[in-house]
Image (cartoon, rainbow, N blue to C red):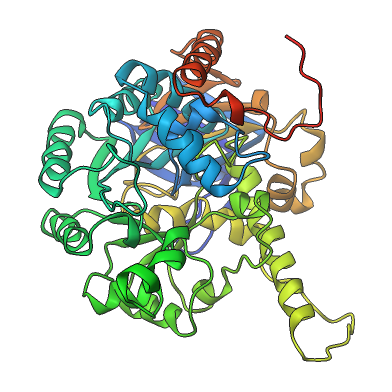
Length: 479
């Protein structure tokens, strides 16, 4: 028998190219990597550290392809507010008031949410830099949590979309990106440069940001179309086409581009994306919360465009739960399909032969291997295969009533919003267990909650944003 650092046993949902599921499988781990995976009857490994067994499920770590972690200081405050109230009333002011220490405390609850529910890799877009080391606070929280992160530092400077004082020059943005890259990059953290959307950065400087990513073999992460793209592209930029048409027109729509949200496309833009080899970060849970019934991922998926699922920030992604987002992808898509059908002039009658678009298996793909591809990391993560990082989730389903009977396990996981937190026996990154039985192994849950509450109270008073808390609430809140 061969020896390994850790030997896991259970139902192994590998997410490999052939989508093999080993009903009684094993994963052998050495030095943080998967050394072998397969049917337990063929296992040639033994270990002093054995995890799992009958009734357990082993999955690749989940991948969140879009977030704004610093938004933890305003979780849920989107409720009862308009877009411009959110952005200018409290988003910019509250995040702008976050120095390094506050940013750490603001980001940590969202990061904990991710880790405790099985996310081992997250992307992040950080774009408020009144305190240049605000981003350092977020990365320190990521580092302490043990999960992976692809951090995009977003330079913003368009006076029409950015409040006074929040903009910065291209040189300052690139210099800070280089500083952060030098300080924080390691085996788990990578850093790149980007901007929010086309109308948040001067066009020539946006192109220069993309050139930096191209020269440094990095990803370019952009919201497209961003809300202000639709408002300002034609009126203030003189561009009558779509956001992706503009990116293609200036020569930066390529394989290193990942576009978040990507709804309300113009006809044919999905072909531009497919031909360029760009990726899409779908954000269905946020789209659903905001009532956007026209959510549509089909043009991308039918065009074989790489897509992953993202959560956005806690201001609109309240629970920060990737399992909810998987279910949200399916329900948002199907509601959108029904809305488009009802709005069409085609008189289509129900026959009973219809199959709803999408599946739980597809949703799980988007949250694992496809998310890894969208972040250009599928050579390391996203599936359980020999040589890949041992980023794994071990679920104990022996007492999970919503995961029985076994016949439709993946559907039960996805539509049931995943396992209960205490049923997640282990979350592993690079072979190290960072979460065990629903508890982070090095972080103090109670202290994180306490500090988060304190920081929000301070920020609400400093920025006069308390007026937006529980705005338009029907309840009588008594101190």
